[in-house]
Image 1 (tube, rainbow, N blue to C red):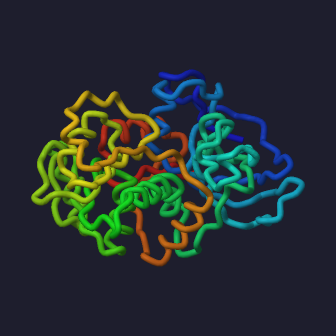
Image 2: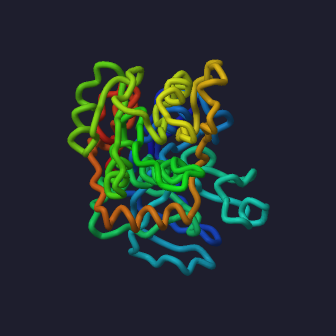
Length: 332
């Protein structure tokens, strides 16, 4: 099969022809249709996440068709359309797995990081961690839901914290693939959304307003009114104290990325008042099932820019430079 592989971190992806994978027990073989390009892919490629499988086929927002099933697979059959997310395997035995928090499993393995992913014509996935895809979505539309949507949904749930009522005034810092999906869910839930982008990013601010934001401005600007919660999709630690200053007492600042630059020191007074800073780690299968059902009901519509598989480097570079509106998607 044809694939784009990462030979070493901090290098470009190179085309390769690899042996066709075969599904083992509990696995499904997938013919890849599309794979969205995620900021986590950048962290892997740029060496910001340690110890990737090498050489590696990146990509963890996969949409494709089941070509074959391994022994013991009952959830899917040949011909089913499925999606594959970042969390690709967990042990099923530890205290986290047994309590429905497999996203915290110490032995967990991740698609496009420790498991070859979707920048290829085929991939193998654990059937437990694949999801059926609603037929109302095209392959390109569905791909960003597998990470940008799923992680965004978990972050949105965490934004309510311990509040008696949901966070009605929600700030989204960084308006890329995840934010353009989650604003649609938040608006469906009756929340008012304030979008924060790079200073001068008029295109992202215009998209935010188009999708229902009541205000859009630069990340260092003060919102026109206090926020009940903020979600940081931008992997910039310096935004944490900025967001803390923007939220009310009892408010929550959710750090949604798997990697973030260092958080600078800040005065205790902006944390005091039962404000909370918390991270989001990956996703659970429950998150996946809930979000995909909700996305189809809203309905969430994704904005995508497509690249052929052979132009994976161009897609990655476009995401790195912040010139993608919505999500970049590789078509295979």
